[in-house]
Amino acid sequence: MPSSALSLPIHTKRLLLRNYEPDDLESIFDYYSDPDVCRFLLSEPYSLDDARDVVDLRCRWTDPTKPGDSLALVVEINDFVVGDLTLKLRGEKSSIGELGWCFHPAHSGRGLATEAGSAMLALAFEHFGMHRVIAQMDARNTASARLCERLGMTREAHHRQDWWNKGEWTDTYVYAMLANDETAC
Image (tube, rainbow, N blue to C red; front, side):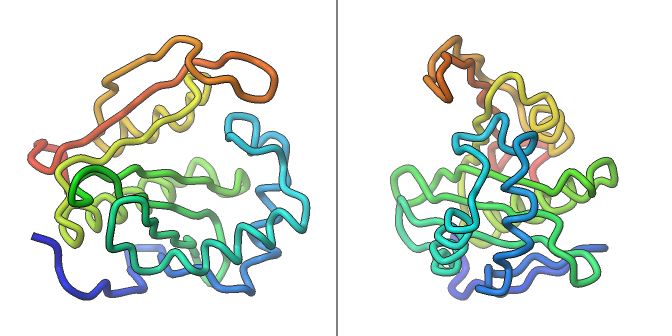
């Protein structure tokens, strides 16, 4: 059963996960404007206006209550934004969530995405009472696939050339975790 009030921010061993704030614009623009970061995302590298629009939107993604709503959190270490996570409520009665993330490449290889992703999965299962959480990605995004595996998610599908993105057909991996999986938080 879902809890009543969402208690933020979330503190992990090293990280702070909190709602977006307008002051996050420069930090978000810094990594979302990088072509290498956006290579496997659905968007092109952000302009400053794109980043402003996204931050404005995600500042409102704070209290999801029904299918289609999202929660967006910024990930900080020592007061520095290193990435962000989203959890979209899907499925009947918001019983399914879709997890997404993006992290600044300067902070890769330190387990920060794993630590943040674990906290978001715990929130999905424990606070929202979700039955299932999925993550979908371009199949060439091996870093995200490895992250899913470190989180204990299972690759359930490899859809061949199912998405037209940036002028080409791309494959999609679908990973998932169930609330009752041994590896679930």
